Length: 328
Image (cartoon, rainbow, N blue to C red; front, side):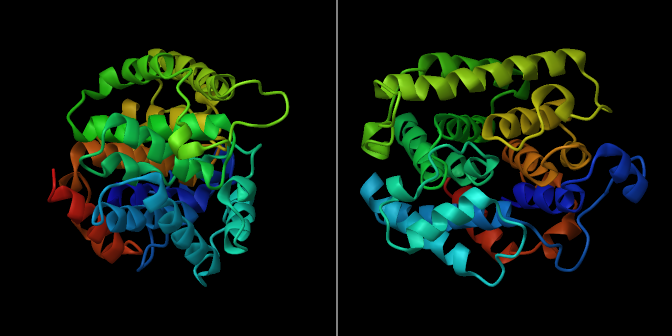
């Protein structure tokens, strides 16, 4: 949770800047640490906290089911929408969908069905961190939290892959094995539609079956994993990470480019999030995901000690992460 927030904070000042302007403003190395006291984060961390707090409540009241967690996530997302701190350039899709949720619309009507923006998976790391979930439950929950705002199948599948990458890293997977494991999951799950979690979300013009709907998301993720393999084979740790895997504005690109930054620096978490921050794309979301992956693998000791005292929402990050650290 702290790694996610550190990456978000480091990347926030460089979002919407191209590489030349980043280097002009911050030097060749880019920003080197989150600045300010507190060091402010964006909606990426705010919504990840919302997902995490609802999960804490749900896991304290088993069994964990869609009927239990859906109203909890709805309430947390609406609270985020109405918060005076919701002034960090939040994404239009999240705002529009949460406005629908706040108006009491059923979530399948409130969600933006055509959006696969990175807001679907920038916040999903807590679903990967949460202990004790079966693979089916983790997959369904990861896709549901995305579906509340982003109804495009690629938003769902990229969120599931992000959650599983976090879980596998917590469980000790070698980072070098991660791309192949994610690719295998794409193939294994290509026609698996989680109806218990998603209901009739798949029903829309031109879609003949739920398997057809979800397969599109997995295929688009596989395409970005191909690009990830290409970028890793190139191994250029100084290049703009968005050149091959994408700028990160969409869910599958954010996943691939966040993974690229982490995998280029698997044992150097500060360099991983700095690489995400010094990019031409959605730098805060890319660095946020890179920080989540690095933190899942390396834990709190990998980060500079003084950062935890300055990062915004440190008490909530500690509450979520600490609860799940204790249950490993």
